[in-house]
Length: 142
Length: 441
Image (cartoon, rainbow over all chains, first blue to last red; front, side):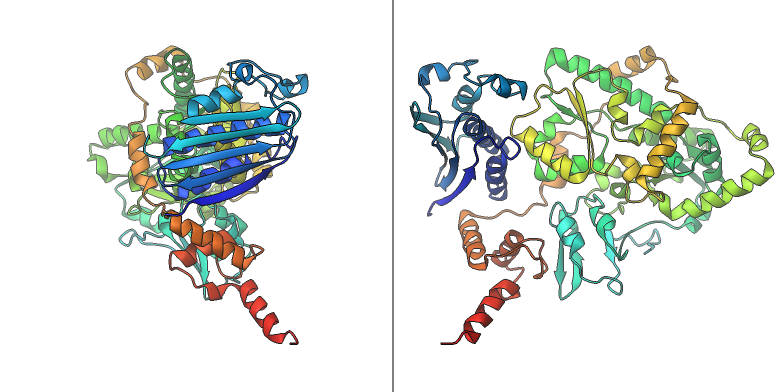
């Protein structure tokens, strides 16, 4: 089986449209009759990732790849980058601005949530250059 | 209006009058589950995919689409007929007291007409109790979703099965009333329970369900449904006649039921959460808005909200597709009547909580059951088919024109892959072929 791959653009500061990519991914997975718990995990990770790009990133791309036995989610952006990845992985740690918090975001649960909901999460980032997230989800796990 | 005598039960929820239909594709595009297609200019609804939201009825510019209904003549054959009144009916007659409307309904041929007020109050108390309990036990995930709108329940089971645990497991007021009414009347008349015929007079397109459809299990408490607009003229006529004879005199001889303002609020979006003592609530109305919110809940949002009231009809049940009066006029009528009736509760809180603690009012339809009833209808595809769909989409480069008879290019591509349509149906693709031929070499 050849892998299915599709990419979606994420626009910086577009809070209204944030989540569109994840909803699209979710709909594809639903049509493939994936287990609903697996879909939920992927949707949550996708959304958290999208929000990170919208808040901190420049423009970004979310790519979903469906392969035998696993689904991969890559989120790449050209934004602020993460200064201290270890800190960012801690629950409640956030670099969100006052404005973000007023909108109800920036609780510092983004990366921790992704960690919990994915089977593999790797974060590559350089301050000022951007961030690359790679997540994997085992299809058999659910 | 197509009428089905009760011996013939159709599995089709909607029927199209092909003589009036212009093939405009409005209904095809409006359908949230993409259940309608135009085949050779003839609209067809796949009833397995239909969630009975009534959106097609609303958007049809020519009135070519109708739901099945019962004729009043059928009433004469019934031993004891009871009609359960949706409180939205009160919003259809400006300035008329609800009790007079009940009386008029009875006069058109029912043995009893029953009001929902008490059961709405019971539901609200029980909902409050469940929310308070859930704060401690965490039995259901936040936000809880109101179980009242039947379309929302179907939408969730069909398209958002992840959210089934969010639905608050309390019976709808109408189900509670139906259960009670059948018990009480069969006892009163000393007849068998199934000799009591329960009608439901409703603005709700989702309730118009022929018995043999896959949704029967969910709706079995009521025997027959009638749309408000289908009997509106008869009720008006009765009200006029009552007016001439002096309503006051009649009121004394007829059985009066206490009706509270809560039931007038019930039909308006936000009316349900207005009766629930939690600050963390939301009321969402309209089909698109409902879908957008459900998608967001699936992404993990709104965890800080305790209860969401969804109504897929715009402005709530006053916007029901089977109402006779425009939703904004109906809303005004209801709000003005509310001022007269007040919001005082008819039944004491403690009594209801006692009932609730005995498990009374908790829905016995389980989430697994809901999933089984609705979830099976969805067709699934393989990864290979998904890739093929993407390839076709690239080839079409379409504009979602719906000229092929499918609502959008993606659905068309799916149909092609599933063998329900041929690629040649795409006008865009054909035009490009013609352009190629006409192009000078």
